[in-house]
Image 1 (cartoon, helix red, strand yellow):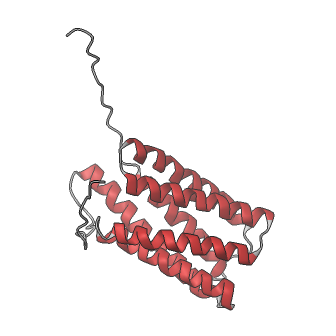
Image 2 (spheres, helix red, strand yellow; image 1 turned 135 degrees about the vertical axis):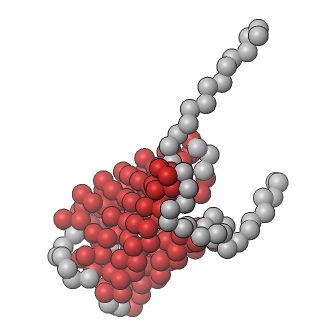
Image 3 (tube, one colour; image 1 turned 30 degrees about the vertical axis):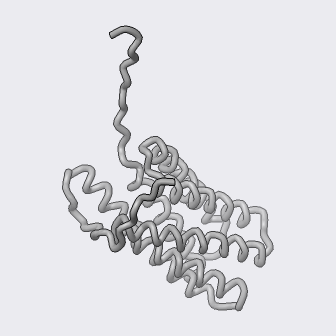
Length: 193
């Protein structure tokens, strides 16, 4: 045996159900203001900070440990997004500057949609609704479009997120797919650099 060190491998639970639930809750609550069901953003702050941000950052850190770059990047980027949104709502913001942040996140979401298409249809549905949400927000910010459209898209992100969160959690408990996630639509090849 000599100087060999035994490697202990700890199995980490899948944090995706929690991370996606956080995204779903944050977008659901945020959509209520854009849909005219609630007023102001102060009441949204706890939901976007604790579920939109903290839950996704926690999921991100575990996904990095599980060597899942897609989920870690998605949860990390959107967790930080919700921190930034919460701060802009709290401190006030310049709408055009927010628009440029949305452009950056739309670019991110488009290439994440491409990657999601290689994983399953449920993740692709989440990212496609996020793409549509960012487009609606850009229309609202730069062209004076209605907030109702952004609210509908946020609600779409919430619905697809709740479904995927439930599908992941139930699969982990049951050991088989209870709610179908759908087969990948793309096959990406890994290239050596």
